[in-house]
Image (cartoon, rainbow, N blue to C red; front, side, top):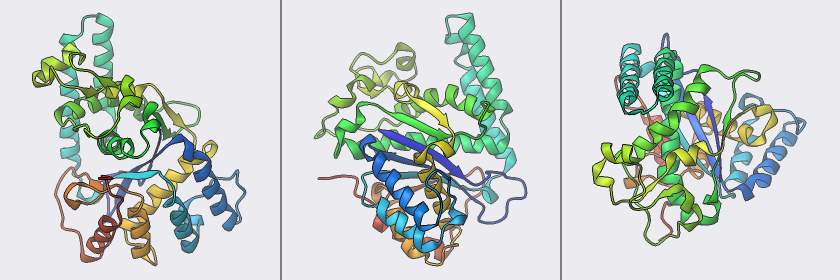
Length: 338
């Protein structure tokens, strides 16, 4: 299973205007689909008179050509997951408070570490989280929620249809600096697996009893196998099975330059398209909503398939955007095959 991740928008809080939407999106697909989405991307570039080796951005694409691109992706088995935040609704002081609370929760685990080196690593990690600029912290949190959405919903979706694709997980994330690792990437690699594991245990997603999970057996804690430090936090899970999220995420995760990898270019176009759609800037927002919604998985109780994140006040969306969201909900792929 390949999970491709990119974002659109700056996540900056200061001076953010109304409807300053920022997106983190993931395109998850079986490895067997790679050549198919690469071919769709090449067709798009050909229509826009771009060489197949060149990267192409949404602003370089005619709307009808982008619609064709989405129509072609809708035929494939890949799915789109998304978290979104409107920067104009995020308050800097509340973001910082959230950031401090998260850092403190990491510090609480220091005394549980047996070795000095482990304690020092946690102190360094806490410091990294605290030093992250507000906009990068928002992006980090949105990205972690997105990955949790894949573990919770994406696995349920694919285990019903292509369980063999869950034998391994390859995470590829757009790299921002070609020749160095930025603080965001370093903190993300160190911090996200542990936080994702905590999310999973706080809200354990039930396995579907009619599905075969044997292909991903190496990523599942069997009864009695959940580590003691996790049982201490969640004693009610002592005799439960659970996903080993750290292994799912850490085994194969790469920050990769979009210019060198077509899959990152695909998810970049999807993230940018979602952002433009939420800003209602397409000529035909309804058809784009239908096609982007058609790539997404149905949520429980027909909730919106886009996970909204806010660090401040909430605001009722206007009628135009509400209509767009309704189209996306109606167009989603059904979660259950039963």
